[in-house]
Length: 219
Ligand code: HEC
Ligand code: HEC
Image (cartoon, rainbow, N blue to C red; front, side, top):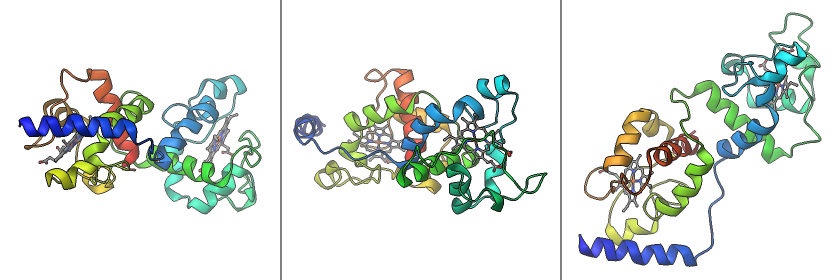
């Protein structure tokens, strides 16, 4: 146990020296854009109940249901405003209402892909976000990547040093099996021999922020 702590302390030092930080997953970037540009109309959960929608007296689509039948290509067209006539499921002429702004001048391709990744998260995830994933992202870089890896794949530098196999946080199948409460408990109390207990080091809100980040990581 003592060697483990020496090891952890040394890696902490190494971590602060090496500056390379992995870029966050697309759904994480997508959420940031969504919060700034889409939430006002589409609402925090995508249900179409944002404050601006009420003001403008428009009815944004409930993205949690309409998106299931839309391909990424179609979503891209809807968001950029290119090819509106190709959209199905509209009552009149299959045309999307002008109340949905055209974003083609605002976002580049990578940003549109990120937005789509987050919209997919909103329409498919069984597990809602808890506290702010942006806080979770920073904590994850600080405390978890040494074992779980920069992208959450379970390949952090400690894995070879300690011969351990941390859970793959980027796996949608593995992560969807864990409820938010399962994840909270695992982080608070630890798991197996080498997943440390973070209760006392991190607050409840910080642990909930980590759960949110892992949800976006595994989308
Ligand atoms: C000013 C309000 C407003 C904003 C801001 C807005 N939308 Fe919309 N959006 C709408 C309305 C209204 C509709 C419904 C249009 C219709 O049904 O013809 C819509 C429809 C959509 C649809 C089509 C849903 C479907 O499958 O039928 C998508 C996808 C969408 N919005 C994504 C976005 C994204 C992504 C953003 C942020 C980049 C965004 N919207 C910002 C008002 C808005
Ligand atoms: C010293 C290495 C190490 C560090 C640091 C670490 N983990 Fe882990 N973690 C593991 C290992 C090993 C497992 C697999 C445990 C098992 O199932 O035996 C694991 C499993 C998990 C699981 C899955 C638990 C389950 O029930 O399947 C979660 C969630 C998790 N870690 C979150 C975190 C978070 C969040 C952090 C940072 C605050 C973190 N871990 C830091 C080694 C680590």
